[in-house]
Amino acid sequence: MKRRELKSMLMAAAMCSLCVLPTDAVAQSSGRVIVGTVVEVQPPRVTVRLPNLLGYLRVRVRTYKVRQPAALNGLKPGDRITGVLSDRDGLLHRVRRIAGIRDLERPL
Image 1 (cartoon, rainbow, N blue to C red):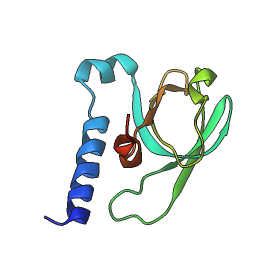
Image 2: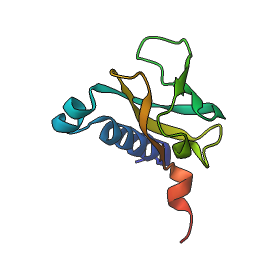
Image 3: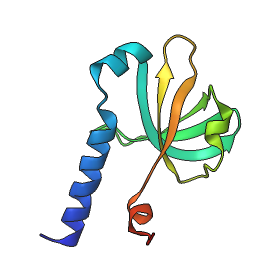
């Protein structure tokens, strides 16, 4: 198997595992899971470039207000993040940075 194919498969598996939440977590959060790349950080707001849907080539960029601005500490443009957009208050909850391949390759 070629290295490029292996890398693509690993990234796809990682993204799938991050997008699937247990049903109680989804019901409890009453929101949508957001996965994207940070474009700009201005606490308490973060601008995120969302992934393209299959068949659509447009770039979607959204700005979200974050419930806990301290969660934005250490984030910089280019970081991949995940969070839950609440239907109740319209805020982004549980913002987490996703470790990339380069982060995993660093020696401990």
